[in-house]
Image: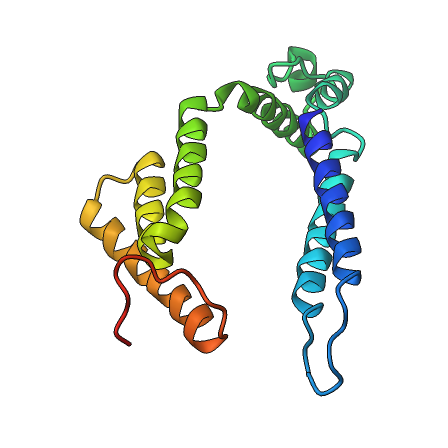
Length: 194
């Protein structure tokens, strides 16, 4: 049920992104790519992925209960073990597929209960801190700190590697947007000399 709600939510977001993208003026005739191009690209990509998600979510047998019911009808119990009658009759590969489907259905239903909410809350806190630090601290400084914080929350314990990776990624995106594309990002406390 959760997969269906999420997939429909992403499809609705894709519709909103596409509607907003088409409301952007095209721009001057001399521009090869106008301001509408990137939002349209994002909207089309989001719509494509959302449609795939909706199809998978609403496909018959995609819910754990439907898989288990189908496997019981094929001669298996809901734990995925083959009943003795099916073994005695020389079960073919279709029983193995149903057994794997039951096992994967049970795994999918148990994932909902395994969400580690403290990690989710720490990631949201890191994102809020990033938003608050972005302008006063500067883009590349705040992004480096955000990368290190997210890496720590997700289990990394190599501080030097995380700082170096975050710094390289932050500086690369800073130079791409600020220097090459001309999109001004907050320079912050420490301004780059180059």
